Image 1 (cartoon, rainbow, N blue to C red):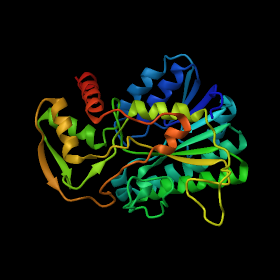
Image 2: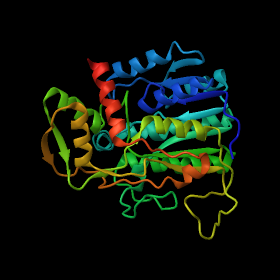
Image 3: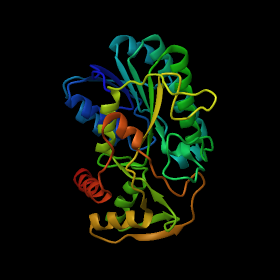
Image 4: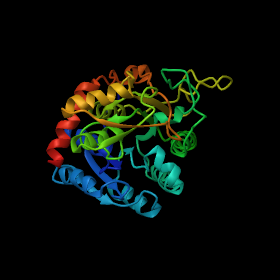
Length: 340
């Protein structure tokens, strides 16, 4: 079921949370990686630089600072490096920020992804893996979320851009034969994580004795996915470029199949955790209680996420399984060490 692992991977968003960990995993198995990142200031650039500082001395790693929306600069990087696979993780993240700054999402997530697709068209690669999001399931109420479900009711612009990425990738797979795999991530967390994420904010505030903002605590649940599980899934998948689905039926199209070499996988823990339980796990790891400020659910949020990962397990023989207790303990230990 698997092909040979790629020898040369161009990875966008290399100084980002997921990109950093995936780059480390690829380098550990001897893959050469060209990391691309704009090092923008959406969150603390010093954290991005600290991640990059860990990667820079590693054998097989090179880095170029550029914006993926800069079409000519990205094309030139492809021409120089000649990747045989691309892992596209650069994006403007965040549901709530997409309500405040919508244009940042059209530039990074739409124009930027088009640059990546065009580069893969003109410099053919064996496989393009790109980040989508569980947010594409939007208003869907049926759980667990499955790749067989339609995902056409986004409730945030961020989700809409990620769904657009899936459709753009499908069109390029159909037109130009670019094997493309989209990954619907479910609330990724862990060491070196993003400061805009709830677990990071909660840990920081609890350790500093400040209150945390808790939105709809009794209603919300999330499928929290530990970063090492995500990296493992991506490294396995990059060696498995998709082929057209032999069972695709154009009269009854199944969203999980395609006549083009194109696939989508959920990357989740298949274990939703209620927000109140999540906070208690962080309190245990920090060794002190949280001071809670209760607030209503925010625009663009969904009540619950829950991943069906059977397709991922069937494809690569692996599905995420790290418990929230283990994952949060590792994150808090990293946080204390990194921030002193």
